[in-house]
Length: 115
Image: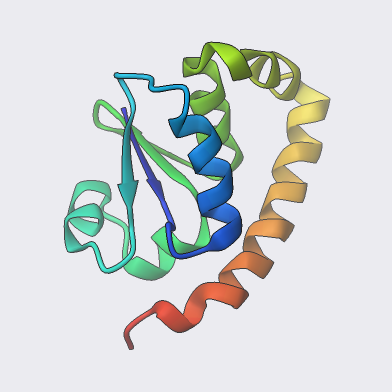
């Protein structure tokens, strides 16, 4: 599984660094900053990658809240988050909240995009 995240975003990096400490061998952490290979592997452009967290498992690409669920499911220490946030009503609220937070993080970090 590959997780595509924005390492140049302090908030994003801080959260991903917590997950990296768990040293899960089946997760490859991919920084999307100036990474043309990430755009090829995901078939997403730089703007789309910057806008949300993405996970590639096999040929399937998940993004946003769904991507977080998959990350949490794979990390034993955070599986409780998966179990809680996968509940339908909770997931709806989580997904909505994620989109708001991700949008503001995107606005904060979009200057890194090359036009």
